[in-house]
Image (cartoon, rainbow, N blue to C red; front, side):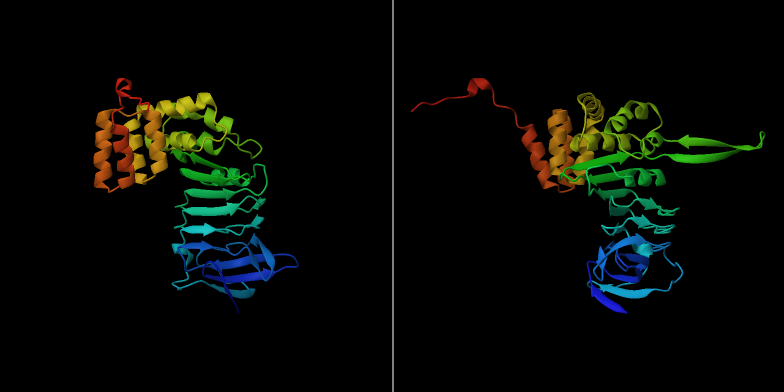
Length: 323
């Protein structure tokens, strides 16, 4: 068995090809783990069938132990945050099947083949971090949004260093038995379906994404999700039109109390400053927000709120002195 140092603890079964590595099995004892980009000087490009599935059957191949600090129980059921290899191009069938604790997946946009049911039973998966390697929209985001119906928090790191962050609301698909007619009725519940399925030629259009907003508010939706969606587009306004910007601000204005109190709970000073400047909350709401900031010991947020409460000096009291 080859023993290597790395960023995370892994027990790997691999196959060396002429110019790349195939990961056949990968087990970690870490809650947050990073798969290696290279092994033996070759890029890791393929994640094999059931590669990370807990209790997957053993396969023949070269054994590699990667160590990093203290070891624990080797069981991917506890894996919550996974970074895939940067050179990965092929994810095969059921690759992450049954990783039920996994809530965050980090990957690059080189993946051009996804097998069947790669994310099946990844029931906690809610966040994707996609790093672009070329100035075009990859197919990865369309695939991920199509596979996961829950609310998704997606962060895209663009090649020019900018950041795009988007919320995709949840929806559910249900089949209800219609006994009198001897068939099943197919129903979609929740306003998130158009967001997960708005890709054209597997590419994302921000104009189309923002254009779904009015329809989303008219359909069955979660007000908290709408708040997060509106705030996120304003905080990271890539390709945001003036019209859409106004619509998002209008929603936050109607729900300014919830928006401020939510942002305080995040302890995000930059986000709180954005809302304070954009919403101009009334004095009683500022007092309420100050009470919450004190209760949760958010000192930075409290300082911003107190600064906002300071009365502006009247221009008549401004003095100029000439010496």
